[in-house]
Image (cartoon, rainbow, N blue to C red; front, side, top):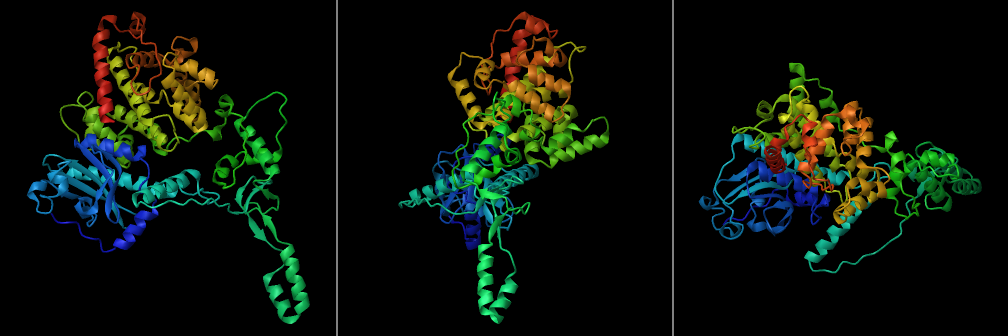
Length: 602
């Protein structure tokens, strides 16, 4: 066995790796999603995001392996970070560097390795995204490019770890990265078998609240007069200079760095707490009879205080009043913006070659969307026997309209990576949404042509039908967690009943308001609003797609998210879509197979 060498810039490389504060942190879904997808697309038993530390390689994400790190001197990634290109070992038993390596002769029995270096912005190699197999193989050019695309995705996620460690406005540490860094420090101490002394210190940070412009953060200290005048007076007239300096010192005061006004009060003062309490009630638009009219300052600060005060190191006693979701969702500033790529895709009419080229370009620029579409096209039930290795080939197999719908849905669902989803498992939401979308395509094929909606409308509606869960996690993370805990514990109660009792609003209403905020077509808004109540008169504008979602959810009642749907399917459920009930069993089998393929492709 030949141990890996040491990089020329090893000291700078280690410093760069440690500056990201990612070592010894907990698993994160955004990294796990990449390794799971790579494992499926490359058909390998093991995929790793390996970060090469001083004496070890530590795995930020791993599938098919039961350990979280190995010594650096036996690592394959230690060799991979010494170059810029993919490091590939087609057969370890034929390679003098690895034939007697413990990871080859023992568990996990590596016979094939391919690792793409993960490069920091300053050029340092942090580690690798690697593929491992227990039998010899080799990657072709297309597979090598795909692995490089996945590695760029990992690099982007690692960079975002560093970007979110401070608040944009106040430049103060946010709570989440502080907790991650604390956890990291404790794990390091545990690994080194040393005590971890904790010191709690109260720090003065000049945190203030401006009652004029609603700024919350560090303030600016200014004094009257001029420093130069004071120096001249000191040298020429000692006593006047001394008096002038005292006057300047006493004239010091805090001003807002935004508006320049001296209307600053301490952020932890009773007055500030009162304003903040009133502002949060205003922000939530809580309508309570007899409630005192909030002050002008409270109305202004409502727009920023919720975000800025997260960074304050001084705990503030906020009101326990819950957000009125029915009112809050009407506030356009409270809702997340539609991802830019989704906006661009929806704007394409797809009735000319220029739009088709634009769509391909948009998809190819996003590695995550590209990888998922290629994976879906290679699924036996979704594509064909021929395997596609590029987006263009996937489009040939799946069709332009379907690819547009898939790409738009993936782009919109990427919001889940930007929202703190808590108990809402975004992977389950993805699986549920894609499963329903593909089930609807199976149902559509059995419908008469004269009432069958277009495939792109069907698929997009299927992907977006439960987007209200994301809206809830965005608006009120605490009650979103409560909801998903109840969904697990109260298996006999329908989701709408639980939501009405807990939230006084349902996820279908929240999803419809989000769709309206995004200026989606009225038909789509209606589909999102009534997909759980297909028989009400208001649902007519969204038919037959609403009935298709309702039937698909009965066929896949517990796929991904379990919404406690009534699984009894009557002949009417088929007949309303123009389908002969005698075909129910055949369609049910096809729907199940479609869902399995969607899950595998995910």
